[in-house]
Length: 185
Image (cartoon, rainbow, N blue to C red; front, side, top):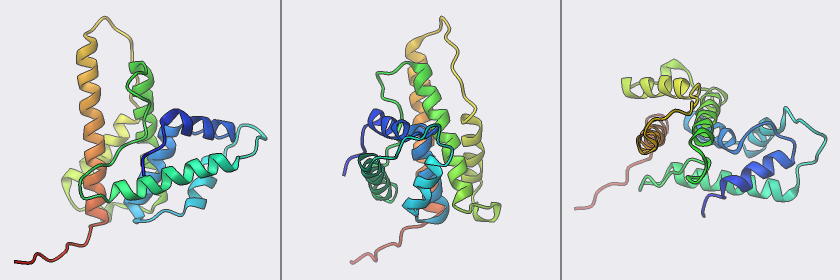
């Protein structure tokens, strides 16, 4: 199963009156999964639409798309080949939109960790504790257009995005370790 495209998920949320972006929506889901090991899809969807901005109804197509995001994320976050992808604005978008999307994702992830029941006692390693703090800092990120080097901005963004992606997998492995299959010699 492939993760639905960012614009489709964003539109599904918007059309149902959600004030949450696709990036934040996915971050919340990933945080819940890391902290609790499971996610009640109905609770997650209720959260996404609790601060609805209109009377618009959530369509069956929107719910189906969110179900695909949910199932794909469940599959990817525990995949042994580290194929986890974060639902973020696409590479063709401006750097400002992409940074804002990553900040929204991190903000949602922090909220999802809380919703999933994360507490300090659960964070055993210093690396994971530091990662959780870093995610909170990244959630405050913003972009100011300057005359700097766009290639350097792209490289820096890619490094931060990969740091967050791998940190999520590390946190998930620490909080929800996969059972190891015995090695046969």
